[in-house]
View 1 (cartoon, helix red, strand yellow):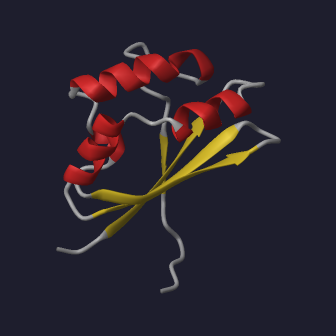
View 2 (spheres, rainbow, N blue to C red):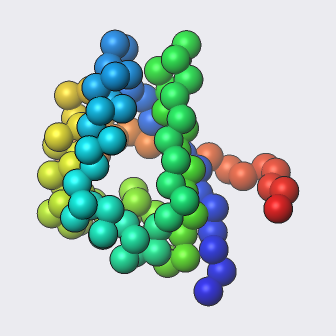
Length: 106
């Protein structure tokens, strides 16, 4: 199965860099297991501190990105847990903007 690369951006609220890092360093094992079982890996999130923009990159060997898993209980719980430090939609999902890949070098 072909691996797809997926990038998107989100917004962290000002002043929450350390809290965001802390929560992700303690990511729940059941969430990691779900992501891996769905074929999501090589997942990184970067922060532009000037704009509080988060850039996420992940590779997918399955059909779903992490943002497609909002119907699972663990993802709903994670989104609620993160909602106080991010820009979110009414269902607590982070406001995400997919990014178009314009260059890739292997």
